[in-house]
Amino acid sequence: MAADGWNSSGGAAAVAAAPGRGVYVGLFGGGGFGSSNDIIQRGTAYFVEAQGGPLAVNATGSTNSGGVGFIGAQVGHEWSYNSLMLPAFEIEGFYLDTGNRHATVNAPSVRLPVHTFENSFSSNSTVFLANMVLSFPTSYSITPYVGGGIGAARLSLTGADSLQVTPMEAGINHFNSGTSSDAWTFAAQIKAGARLAISNNAYLFGEYRYLYVGSVDQTFGSTVYANHAPTSPWTVQFDSTSYQLATAGVGIGF
Image: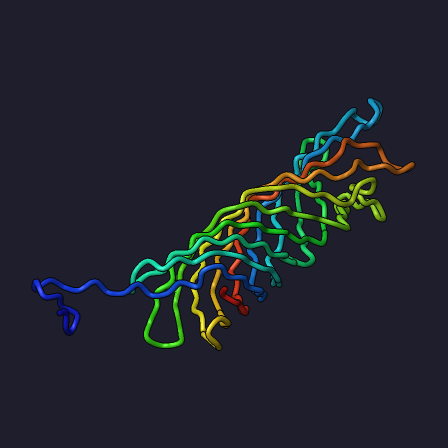
């Protein structure tokens, strides 16, 4: 007969596996901070030959950093494994509002030694991730965990404006024929947090997340004004962005 964690043959008795949550769902939200990122704006202005002919624009700069907010949901399954670790797989999606962003970009050339644009736009992302999570059960109501995942993000920009400030072209939005753009890119995250049981099945959780969103090319409309040379559509390449996020949520295990 086994006693005090030892079996009759003198070996250590098997420790019972901690119960997993099984299928679970959660709702969460929070806020944080997004980094600045480098951008490159490319296009061609089709000036007539008397004005020097077509002018290629290759403007570089960076966006400002700023605060963000997000809200999302997750569904997953956690298995019983042993008394020290509970593995889980989950899928989650969230809407990330990155607010208004600004960038100053410069495209000096022989024809225009100083050629500067002030850009602005509203931005948000819809992020989808598949995560692996490891929880570490304790004898208390609190369960710490760590996780990570990969997926995709759809970056949406609206109300884009590109104003040439040097030389000044007052009232000319160089993106005026198409001020919105959407594009998909790679996304990944790591997270660490803890759950607090509030009943047999329900729990609260809080966590820190580091979210990486890859570089992406956005395409805006050409410049179309009666008093301005026509242009090609504009391509703006955004470098990768990182986010530091604080999360709070509620979940239910089944």
